[in-house]
Each structure stands twice: as C-alpha cells, then as structure tokens.
Amino acid sequence: MRILHTVAYYHPDLGGGAQEVVRQLSERLVRRGHDVTVATTFSPQRQFLEHNGVQIRHFKIRSWMNHSALGIRGDIEEYLDYLRNGQFDLVMNYAAQTWCTDLTCKVLQEIHAKKVLAACGYSGLLGVRRLFYWSYFQRLPSYLHQYDTIVYHSANYIDKAFGDAHGVKNYHIIPNGVDSREFQRPDVNFRSLYNIQTKYILLTVGDHFTNKGHDRVIEAFWDLKRDDVTLVIVGRDIAPRYRSCWKKCSYDACQSKGRIRLLNQAPRSHVVAAYYAADLFLSGSRIEAFPLVIIEAMASGTPFIAFPAGNIAEMPGGILVRTVSEMSVRIDRLLGDNEGKKDLSDKGLSAQRDRYEWETIVSQYEKLYCDLHNSESATVVHM
Image (cartoon, rainbow, N blue to C red; front, top):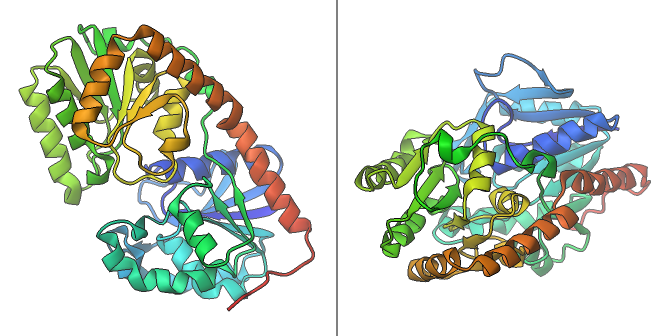
C-alpha cells in the first residue's frame, strides 16, 4: 500500500511526541512491506529525503507560532498540488491545528485516496486558546465528516467528545505506545554518570514549554523540604519565545546547590537510564493528549504522580493530583512506601506490555488502513 503521513515536524527535527508517533508508525509499516512517505516542514538540517526506508517530502511552510488558526505562509500551492496529484492509497494527517492538516482540509474532496485524521486532542478548545481557535472549531465539523475515519488516542478526551457532539460516527480508538525492548535495564549507571548522591531521585521529562508544567514540579520539590531528594529535569531549551521557562528552571537549579539537575541535550540512552534510576516520575503538564513520557515511565516500572492532563487519568501505574501542595504530599508519602511503589510499578508495567506496545499498535493502524483500502465505498460527505 502507498501511504502518506503528514506531521508538522519529522526527523531530524525534534518535534516531540507527534514526530515520534509518526516515525514509529512509518518505519514499522515500511518494515511490513508498505511504501510510506512523510510530508513535513522543511529543515535545513535534513540533508536526505529518505530515512530508515521512509521517504520524506518537505515543504517551506510555517504557521505563526505554530498556531495554524493565525495564519499559514510559504509554499502552500506546492503542498496542495502534491496532495491533489499524489498517487497514494491512503493519506493520514497526524494532529489537527497544524499547517499540514489544516491545509489538507481545503482539498479533502479533491484527494482520491482514503483519508484518516489522527485528531490528537484539540488543545485549541482549552483555556485562552479558545480565543484564537473559535472560528477554527466552527469549521472543523464539516471537515471531520469528509474523512473516512477519525483516530482518537482515547475514548475519554475532548477530541472524541467534540466529534460525538457533531455526529462523527466513523472513528477508531488507537493509543500511543513505546517499544519495551528499549526499556530493558540499561547498561548506563545514571547515578554514577551524573554523580547523584541523594537517596531518592525524582524525574520529569519534557521540553521547556509553559504547558509542560516544570514550574509546578519545581514548586512541589521545594515544598518537600527534604535534603535526601534530587530532581532531574530532562528537556530542551528549544525556542527564544519560551526562554523564560528555561531561565526559571535554571534559576531554581542554581539555588538548589545541585539538587535540581537540568539535562538539556542528554543522549537517549541517558534518558532511559534516568527513568530506571528515578524513584518517581512527575508530570506537571497543563495540556496533553496521550503523553508518551507517562508510557515510558510505565515501561521502566517507575510510578508516576501527575496532574490529570489529557487521558492520564485512565493510565495505570500512578497517582493523580490537583494541586502543587497535593503533589508534594503524595511524593513525600510515596517515597517511603516501598510496597505502594511496587504495586504501582507492577500495574504500570503490566498495562504497558498489554496495551501500549508499538508492534501491537502498528498492527491496529495497519488493519485500519487495509480495511479502508479494500473498501469500495467512497467517503461519505455530510455537509
């Protein structure tokens, strides 16, 4: 099958969870014999148009501050012509509110391939983002009905609720995952590598965006008032407009006398080792859809304490909190509760192996794609 995936960022750009999901799905489908192309944003660091068997077509297109509702600029017609004329059996747009999906919506009826949207949460429905995206979500229902199916990562999040409210009947629930083989016990000794001497390690992983909530995790750490705990924050200082987040974390790290560690460019092997070294994983995120970092914590057997962003509430292996003070109290209690930690660890490991394994998830996508490809019926358009 000839498949086109679209995603805002792709290898070697580091675009977070969306990029990783599309990379895993694309490369594994290639290994299963499919012809997969990824359409994405042009990157000057990309000196190739093929990676691990996946063809890459990049376009010099950007949306203002990544808010596609506020304007898209660049080689728009080139991309639209590519969609109209591409000889694909199936097109899958990964994530709404990105230029590659939102431009596709303009030509959905001109694309002869089967069409799938992986919705990824509709963060524009949350908080102040509603002001930017009001007209966007007024138009979205008409586009949703032009897709052959919508993929939701969870049955219990706002993207599915939005679809339900607007009569979207053709959908599939397919979660995200990790490769448990990557999370076998690592050779790297994280404590020794970073000279961490405290009895306990707390870990959070996420780039320095405000919505990743590092400020809430740091505040909970200070509230502990314990000298036997080190907080490790793995995340990149990725863009000037978010520099205040990085500066705040850097300031607190300087004040902590080594008990808050920032890992800005840690190799992946060190990140995996950090999961194993950590006693607890913390998530202060304000906005998520289906966070890979929680699944990674589950895969490493590390219990998590998190705010209820996205679908975290349905993921076993952790404790949900509503306030910073509650997070601090829960950390304090759980650090000394070996039985409680083991119970959460076992639940997380079991669920990850059973439900959140990449090979299982790719099989679900492959079946969906093949069923659509083999279907003779055209997309039903309800306007």
